[in-house]
Each structure stands twice: as structure tokens, then as C-alpha cells.
Length: 525
Image 1 (cartoon, helix red, strand yellow):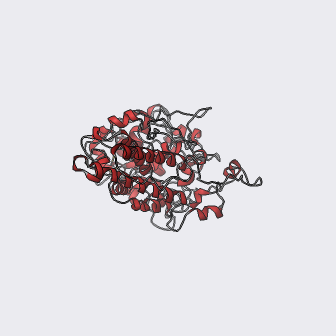
Image 2 (cartoon, rainbow, N blue to C red):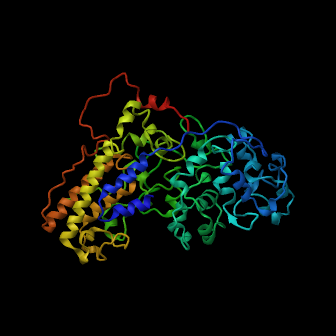
Image 3 (cartoon, rainbow, N blue to C red):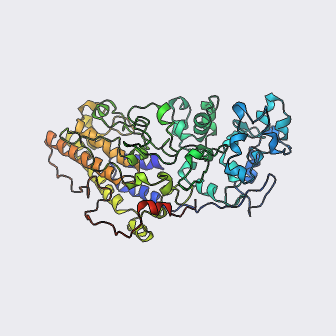
């Protein structure tokens, strides 16, 4: 959905179509998971056929047919999974799964054939990855979300609904182009393939999936094991309340001076894939701008497409990566680089999982920072917040001015697209040197905001700042080209301000502090 909406708004079509993005962000997701304990292997129940009961059996390899179960202690023996490169049982014993009585065979299937098999046949007698089903069809094996859905679904053994939520999310979709033949070497599947992300980056295996396997088997962008490690608790990545949902990476990191825990060097300008794809943040490992660099130097050399990837959400949240030069060539700095959204414990998770694994940010995510009454009124009649409507109008106005400049200069006969990048996807002129730096700055900041997709919610201060700089550069470009234009009439409410409020009135002294409200907020994921 992101790519299709983005392509619609990238050209000269009106940005009013961005309302689709806003409504998507504002939509309703599922509820929260249940708490019943999964039964031992062989149990059933759940009130129906889970999305994984029959499908799970279909995953099992031929060598596992007719297998009986073994005592799970068998897995935790020398020469098996107690030590060495295949050691999993030691860390697994500390997980919530183990505490609730879930064992190896709940996920991997019955193990007797595997235990009895010769070493050469171990892989084909247990559900693992890579895997070939009994009917001869290669599949995702143990990495298939169906395995987790045995319990974590409304019809499953646990009675939760995490699978039900996830399956309707964008994470469950596959973006075909990054996983097409020949793309493995490009690195795209590291974030666009749940198989590559999990097996290669998180598990450290270099043998699979191959390019052919990835193209044929990948069904999802991010699946359960992409974010959660079924074999390890990872207490270092615990949530604020101490809960440890086996997250592979930290759910909260911030940027800056004074003891903050990382610098822009990890996902900042010109970083290679080996750096930014291994960034230790459970969401930002993928949702970063891929070495985004908004400097004038970079804008002059990178002209085929926008300098940030389609997912600069974390860069926006932190407030860096845009071009920060005004129309007169002076370096500028925002009055505020980030808002309170940066400092919410668990950051992305707090808002985007307020309704579960559907990953839809609803009003529930606004609490407790905003009161329930206030949260209910944040969205206006069209489903967007006042900030989103403001940014929407500003983007429309900037795009209109870019188009007006394009029509006036008409580079290579491109007309309104004269300001665009040279890739055929954008339809701009091949002679990009003819585009002045002021236009390159404006289009960079315009695309940064468009690709962030939140219309200012992630960081209203930085969004306003970069669009006002785009406006300043457009005014200069118009003057240099002798084009008559009315200066922007959609000035940001308060550049650099996190809310755009004009009142300086302080909050009532009796109002709970942000920290108190966060500590007392309902959990329920």
C-alpha cells in the first residue's frame, strides 16, 4: 500500500490523495491477546479450526510422517541442542513459552523420527528451515507464521488474536519487486523478506535462502520470528513494565548528546547496508532512511531518485536527515528537533501496537499522554488530526509551486515534471545539472515528508521546519528564474514547535506528569 499510494502522489497528481494514507493510519485494528496456557503437544481445543491446525500439519516434511513425541528433555542433551552451534534449549528455558509449558515439539512437531535419524537425515525429519513438505513442496517451514498461529490466534489453543491481527497488517503482505529474481544480492530482501531478515540477518545463516528460494518462498515482509526470538527471552530488550516478549531488538532508542545511547553514524549519511540493516531497534532496523543524507553535496550527486528510502520514519522521529539550508544558502537549525513522541517509552510500539499486531495507530495510542477526552477529539471530520491537515495543505502548496516552476522553465520539455528526479519512475529531465540547488533542496524535503507517511504525527516540529525551508528555497528559485509567484499562504503554524500552539499558558499544576501518566498507562497488548 505504501508504494502504490506513494507513486500516485509522487507526480503531478494532487496530494489530496494522501487522505488515503491518513485514513489507513487512523483505521481500526484488532484487540489484544488472550492469556490462556497452550496445552502440551497433542492438545486441541480453541473452539474451531485454527489458521494453523491443518496448515501446520501440511508443513511437516515426509520424514516426520508417523513420528511419535519424545520427552523434551531429550532435546537438551549433549550432542543435540544443549551446546554448540545448535544450542537453543539453554536460552529457551528462560522464556515465557517454557514457563507456560510450551516445548520444542509444540513448534517443530513430534521428534521421534528426528532423534532416531542418521545425521544426514536430521534436517528432513523435523520441521525446520529450509523445509520441504510431504507433498514435495518447498515452504517456509519453521519460519511460517502458521507455526505461531497454532496458539496465537482466536481459534488456536491459546485463544489469543495476535495472528488474526498480523495477517491483515502490511507486515503480512509481500512487496514483489524487492524479492524478484536477482534481487538478493542487492540487499533489498534484508528488509522486504521475512525469510532473509530472520534466517540470514538474525540467525546468521549464509546458506539459505538462495535468490531462487527467496523469490519462490517469501510470502511476507515481516513475520513473527522477524521481531520475536522464540529461543531467547532477551531481557535486555524488555518493555517498560518489565515484560519480555522475546524481542530481538531494543524497542526504544534515542539520539543526541548527554548520554543518549547512539549516534547518527549507525543510520546516518552514507552508511552501508551492513550497518543500517543491523541497527538495534526492533522497528527502525527496517524503518530508517537507509543512510539518508540531505546535504547540498549529496543532493548534487544523487539525482535519479530521492535520497532517502521509502521508510524514513525513525529519522523523522529523531529529527535529522533533511536538507537544513534556507533559500539564501544559510545553514538553519530547528527551534525544536524532536517532540515528546521521541521520548515515549517503547516509541513506535506505544502507538502502532495500541490495537495489537495489526500495527494501526489508533486513538488508544494517544493515551495517557493525552487524556481520553482529548484523544477522542484529536481527529477531525476527515479522519486526520489538525496537524495532519496542516501538513497536507502545506505539501499540496509546495507541490503546486514545484509544478509551477517546472512549467515555467520546461526543462527538456518535461513541463510540470521539470523539478523531478531523472528516474523514469519520477519522469524528470535527464540533465539534472540544470536544476538549481534551491529546487533540489525543496524536492528533497518534500519527499522526506511524503515518504514518512505520518503527515507530521511522528515529528510535527521537524516536519514544519523542513517544509518551511522548502518554501524558502522555492521563493529564491522563483526570484532567480524571474517567475512571478505568490509566496506560500500555508505557513506552518509555529515552525519548530511540537504542537503549533500559540498559547504560552502552562498546564495545571495538578495534572500528572508525563512520566506518571506513562507509568500508569494500561498495557493489554
